[in-house]
Image 1 (cartoon, rainbow, N blue to C red):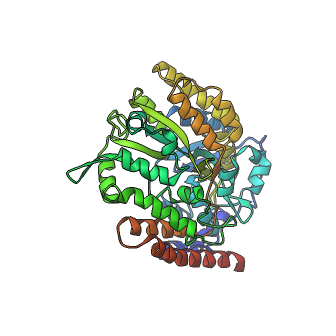
Image 2: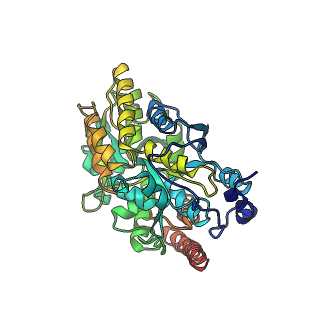
Image 3: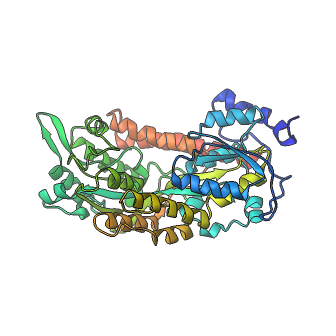
Length: 458
């Protein structure tokens, strides 16, 4: 017989499945019957959706979590979280016990009632939320309630080809974003075009995904801090988009740059930096590990991304653990989330990664987590002590101390779609930055207004 929690769910989520995703108001069961206690022995089953233990960092922590749940049968539904599959599982009355999601999905899922607030879980399992990176916690907090326990943290640093910079008489400061005019000039100096064909990308401004980064570097936010007001038509956002698109236009347009970069051996020894066909770009810190692994002798130089005042800046994103409405074992789910993101688990994972790198004769360049306390301890284990890799590590940790994120909101999927559609319209030559962002502003604000009104009226 289905549990009382699960009997509540099929009708609650009918509109999600029938309409492809009502923004809010879909209901869902809570965890009022759960008894969270960090000292309790737990049993039953725990189905984990959206997570695959594919490397030593994952499996080491999983082993610790399973040990803490020794009476619980754990099973994984591997692969990235498929939102429609997840909502279908809830609508059928058979949700997983816990999900591994992107933090930017939490606002919409919380508003729909697809996941539960974790107040009781955090208190019962003794989870110290002060340990977590503030921007990571902010991204899983909706209407002053926490809906996720952050795991990995993703940030950007500036990566550049030292030989190309030197050949153009430049250094990393010309391409770190602190001076847009200098970066535009550096793009012209670094790129190479012959016969109408792009042979070297000067600078890749990484649109559409990094518009929030460039806007923030110019002093603007895409959305208000409370997640209620879209600010896509802010003149500083328009200026950021005009500048970042101009970087592509100077190289023959976005399609030319994208086609060239897509042809590169991005994850292999023939990557753009190793082959000298890319001057500079901002990129997530995990790519440092890739470059060090496949092209350790590439002529690289690193820095943080910097704002117009020259200060370090990074747009944080990442993963989180969340408990679905109707979870049959929220107690086990909460303990899993606590252990997987604990300081001890991250230290054990770092030790495992360090051992693996030493066995290969390669340096350990660190791991960024959503746990700031763990980050400080993991950094002490880093063995990348010579340039350029030591510089990459320094930039990574400095950037991680200067992060921002887009706040959780009940229309986060619709909001993200609005600004990304605007950027793509400009990149494809279908609109000007001002017109595209003005249209996106209307779309995004309506979605926000409707979603917040639904929450406040239920």
